[in-house]
Image (cartoon, rainbow, N blue to C red):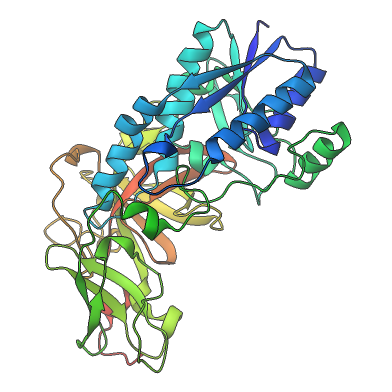
Length: 413
């Protein structure tokens, strides 16, 4: 095997990935990616990117490997952040980390590393790769550490790109990785793990995003009583399942949906709190599927429903569902319990009224039926599909179906 480039972030995971490859005798060099220019943020006194670079530099010096810098700031802004801001300003809850992996780490970085002579690229992701059934490409598998498995964030990366990568930590657990780093004396051994969205980290999201998007004032409306419960200072900054910041109520209320055009945030104002049936849905509509193999699974291509497991949020326990192409004419996909009405159109929740998006390809929509009601199905969040440990791909939630409360609106909760 020729030279291997390691994406070195300054954290413990990429450091141990580099260490393991070095110990295995690979011809190695590191690449530090600059994806975000913090100096352009209004009032930002952070210097975390420079701190990250110094940490990455220390790791590479310890391992006696060269370190190169790669500037992807423009690509990140144009391919990831601009889209995130556009979706956020529509009242949606996008997750830019998947697009960052697809467009930056597994595309821009891949090309940059190959330009430097790398034959393979390694990262510190907790995921695994294995040959596909015909041995001509690769499959993405969950990491063995179920608490740290990061296949969710890689679920939109095509196999064409994945086949050039290595995940040295896929068979390890985080505690073992930290112990390895400490034994080796790596400077990042005790460094705190990264958290939050990739360009925000541990900062307050509301403070950060206010520099890019004007707040959208709205009203909180109770689904139990229909009462106006007060002003929501920013419709875009709240999301499904979140506790509503409403004072003066005798119990906690949780957000169950939005009417974006009319600037309404719906909340469950009954006594059930976080167990309110308005938070639960049995169906959803998905858009923009990204299949790792390139093509959809055979059953879907034939118009038949596909049983699989899924995660609708990172670290969510695996759940099971049935998925079908929304334009399928198969009788199994036309059933009411798949979320389809007599008019053969998906019926969204009354609490999920969004701005129309003409950019969505209607021919690729998927409808999904959960085997058990799912809490807080959130538009624009990634819905990642699995067959056992194999990650099939991802899609984005467009709408949830009618909530359990809408189905039985006479129930007192």
